[in-house]
Image (cartoon, rainbow, N blue to C red; front, top):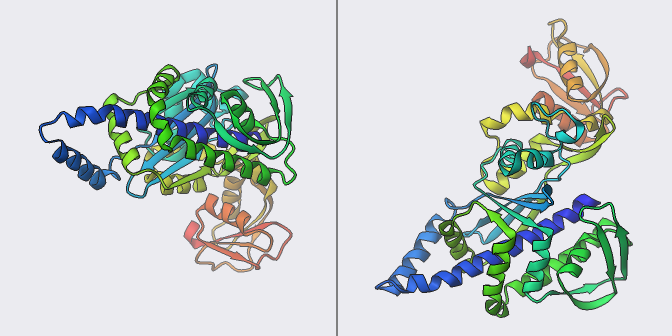
Length: 408
């Protein structure tokens, strides 16, 4: 529940930073560009250059929502000027990410990389986790989010019902008291609205729909002509609340692309995985293969060689214990089923049977299931087996693995 809410807040923060910073830098630098001897030629050159090279200049930026030194929200964003799209991938703060020398349960969460090793530690962790290159980072606080909403004059939202909730344990403490109806929310109220997670009749769907409506209203506000008069104030707000390693030149170049090629689509996703427990602590366990596939699709790199050592650690998940597996040896090599059964056990899978197959001449290894193809794919991925079939499983295990000669 909390994870989904944080994703929405992440998206809003990202859009605010991109549009606010981009618009300010664009308008501030127009006068600089126009002081050239041939302003028309200069502007045309900039436009042509950016149109031809925007894909190459596409940056993967790590955004962090800082709550008193803790990374309360983490996401990677990138803007493609050619496609006019923003891609955003959220990384849950409880993502299981063990690091050498950090053995306490709380230190095995990715947000600990930020609190203990600051932004450089978190940047390294995200690069290893996703197999991509992080070009720059941006850090913003919740107070910064509220200031941004206040600076643009609030956002009009239709609140579907009265929202009342208090949580003194939350960080920061959460006190929500919003009334039903169409109204303009200031920064504090907007933060309450996007953090609210109770009372929706249809659960997550209702909450997500409400947050999407907020996003639409927010985008409409910050892309409207009225925002121009607020740019100086917005720039001051950003300078007070923003920490980044982007240079003025970086921001100017990026902002020119952003303003000239205003995004038509905003693609958001969450790091693939599942929540679960290990040693009585809750974690978000990443589906490493899917995570790198998503990262590769969104950010263009994927499966870097630097990630190999981390993959073996992160792929382990207690969630795998919910998948029962029977492993059969389909070759003449003794002990082969036990070898691969041990690999599955080390990854957390529940191996319920190890035996010889009905034949000893299987050329290729196979994975069978008659219950859940996703479970079969997960087992197949763990052992790098290509052949996955549904409807052929003849025992009570969720998944049956037959080891062939290709695994000798």
